Length: 118
Image (cartoon, rainbow, N blue to C red):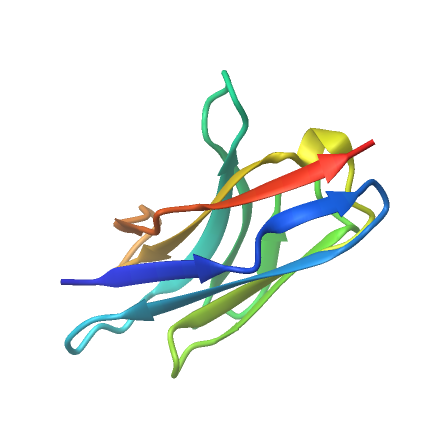
């Protein structure tokens, strides 16, 4: 059983910053990559950022490029999302996800709420 646990969400004013963390645990689990998604009320879940451990280069949704930074530790199955210059439209539940062996995300966390006030 693989578990992903997110932390670091909260309420912040527009222009502020937050840092999300996610740790994956499970017997003999080694992820191919990890990423972050978000879902705003009434909207579909959307990709935010991801990183593939073997390649190492991060990739981002256009809406967060230049403001968000994903990083992590492959050995610890841990991923972070540094969010700067936050906007009210960034308000959503943010989910951590892990890839077992390919491009699909196989495991998901419970989510952490991020609220950006104007």
